[in-house]
Amino acid sequence: MKAVVLEDYAIQQGDLDWSGVKALVPDITRYGRTAQEEVVPRIGDAEIVFLNKCRIDEAVLAQCPKLRWVGIIATGTDNLDLKACRRHGVPVANVPGYSTYSVAQMTFSLLLAICQCADRYHRLVQDGQWRTEEPASYGLLPQVELLGKTFGIYGYGSIGRQTARIAKAFGMEVLVCTRTVRPEYKTDGVEFVDLDTLLARSDVLSLHCPATPATQGLINAATLAKAKPGMILLNTARGALVDEQAVADALKNGKLGFYGADAFGTEPLPQASPLRGLPNALLTPHIAWATNEALQRLMDITANNLRTWLDGAGENIVNA
Image 1: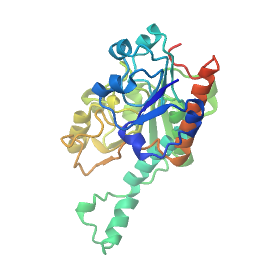
Image 2 (image 1 turned 90 degrees about the vertical axis):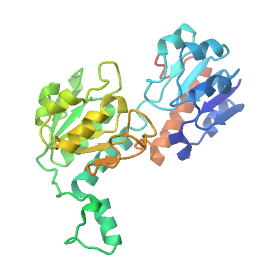
Image 3 (image 1 turned 120 degrees about the vertical axis):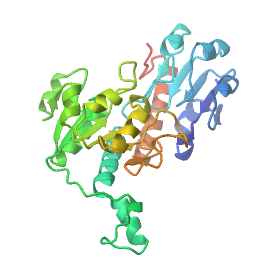
Image 4 (image 1 turned 60 degrees about the vertical axis):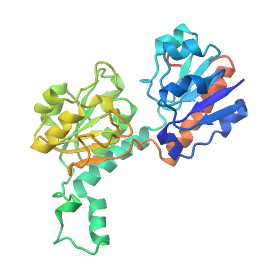
């Protein structure tokens, strides 16, 4: 049995341990960043493919008739046509929950960097300066205490819920807007509200939902107009949730106080992006998921997904 790995630019930077997968399928070929036109020739006659960003759709499946199983080295399934995979009898397995704690941690890493500027003050001191000078070029802002502030969350899956726990530990009031309020949420100590209320009351709004037709462009000029003036917006979820031009405009006119993001509509972030160069935008290269611990969980679950499929069952199948 032959397997192919189509790695993306982010995964190449991580130190993924493929030994568990190789123990199951020794004949495995790994490719670096793969352009869409390279997907079919690189899959070739492989029966198993692992990928992250590459798209698998009807056109690819029609040209890769030997393909029998797809393992997403991630949680999100946006890049796959799951219905087409099902029509071709190709089960797709993802890796849920591996990065919950790491992404929630990055959310607050961004927020703390915005509110207390530790990294920028560090650069100031390293450059031989001190607090009383504070050149504007360092992007330093008045420091903000989180105690008593309102932290809004859109989307309340495992990452959103973990982020809520951290916010409460900082003494913040937590508002949540989510499609389904489950009985087990009752003891979380958060308030469930609609989107308009979330926008109007949040000092900080953090996005933690998948990209779907219903959530694409969720943050746009119209929704930003309803936001609390000076709100801090955080996006460690999906770039498609945000109209980046509208966010850039809101940062420039003061409607938004700051934008912290680890996900973007186009990745790598284009040099022409309206977000680049803004002093009140803190941008990281979609790296929240890549702690050592999360990467190990990612590979452990990936290998187990393959093992259970080879055994005739299959775990974490998203197109059953």
